[in-house]
Image: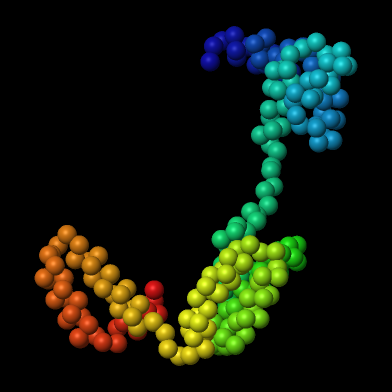
Length: 230
């Protein structure tokens, strides 16, 4: 620290007297308008372009950059409160496809609020629930009523699904009323595909064939298990 600085500090009666000319605030064209600018900011007008136009109407001759520099500390201090993001399509679809007893309480409340705001989605949710009941209880005798109800609603996606059921009606009806199904076959096919993926690039067809046959002999019940995990 130089001698001049020490002498200036000894003579200073207030901290402001320690400031040299380089650090002292200079007069600005914005000074007469700062009170008005502060009031407009407090009222929620935070767009510097609009504030610049407002001050020009009041006689301000300075630049937009001066106003922007004056407001910059306020922008940094401003805390933006961002609410939680609304649930997406996949999330709402997942809630509709799951059993209501398996939903968390907050998920159930959000789904109820969404359905209350969208009657079309509420009708679709009821149809999805009723079809799940037909599927799990094997009550195919109610399928025709479900198709009629689905076609009566303005839901193109369900119209396409119902039309697909009608194209193979006998098979669908048997699958929803009897205990016979293609689950064991599908499970065996799924298991064979898994073996093929494991052996791809590692062995030729004879070894792959032997492994498929041996697995089927040693684990005859595995096909049913795999069908439930597809």
